[in-house]
Length: 175
Image (cartoon, rainbow, N blue to C red):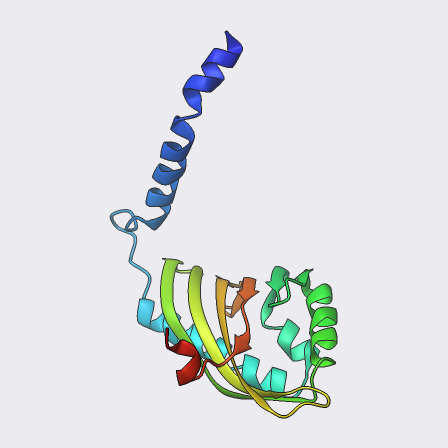
């Protein structure tokens, strides 16, 4: 009988998950002000802009400070670092893989405001990287971030995943 009850509940799992997601994305309860999306976007743009100088300077400590203490950072090669100290170590290792990197731009393409202290961004950065023994190459790095606002009012990345690659040329985009 117990197995039968589980079989009947299995179809409800997606419905319950969808309901929870809808509830999380719903408008705030009456009387609670809606988060200011423009203010959040401005604050996140300020934080995103700090990544370029940290990478250009190969400053692992500065890069790690942009993450929460328990953050997860996933690089394009699937290297995964969890925790502030591990992210700093991972940044040092990553910075050793290239001679130089110069950021052209980092743009937030899509912002999803979860609350006044949580947000998700889908962004991309373009930059020129010079790897040891190779000529400089243009890159594009699409990435997604889950942000949390700390008690100090600063937004930091709690989870990031990257998907770096060479910038497509007109010839490579034609069918």
